[in-house]
Length: 313
Ligand code: 5GP
Ligand code: MN
Image (cartoon, rainbow, N blue to C red; front, side, top):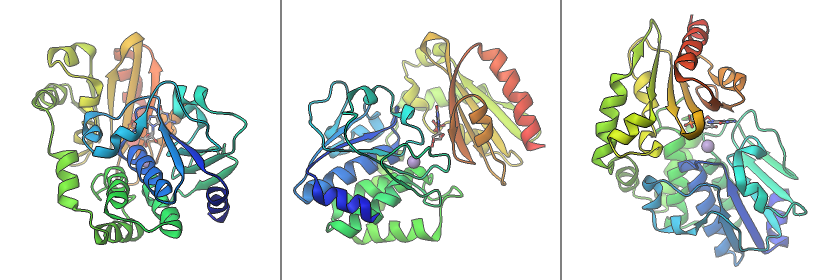
């Protein structure tokens, strides 16, 4: 951490990148870090391959997030919440490769691709690590705290997943002391769904196949079209597959353009789905992982059925 603080003190212009299809932890960590550094008089530029989804775009400071061509001459690059450099997608093409990279992440599989690497797998979220960094160098305030809280809230599934620890709850508590209105953040994120999302959820739940102790569901392009919805409207659907008594692991397969299939895996009761994602070139955490592959939906369903059966039994 000291090396990062030295780097911050000695430089002025920071590019802050996170992974493709950024989630609440990416966006919350990036914005909080940018606001903290700006408060210290530094210049920042947040860049991602993909824009924030509606759920996060409603927060005022989401406007700090850029996509596409970068207009910034960075001195230092932060890469947040990304286990591998490839996870940042096309944002990589915009990086000045001569500049130092500070890699901050909580994935156990992190490849330590940075000039400096702060990797803390026992932290619930990257936001929890950014909290530790910022609280040493700048006076936190309600706004910064709110973005950090978004990261912790979303990566712990509202403090329900196994990564919810005494430490993550303590940090959340401190953030609330800075003025975060917890119920308001929850309402913004979880209680503002467009009606089409709920209709689509009904369709997707119809697709669920229940096995002895795992489940598989899917979303096709046609299912999305029927409800005039996008893949982002399916965020978190995967959790319903795990919410069932006796179920220890679940998968959701999402059909993408160009024959691509995105899979999210979730597990409980000590079952590990990270290695399964890795078999397909993906990764993540023990109880939440994912990958993207190319192929046939039916064939992948069959493959995952066999593999999940082996993992849970
Ligand atoms: P989700 O299923 O919500 O997209 O992702 C769950 C977790 O799996 C994320 O925290 C992320 O770390 C990981 N993950 C998802 N998709 C990929 C992927 O394509 N590659 C890698 N390496 N990790 C992924
Ligand atoms: Mn994260």
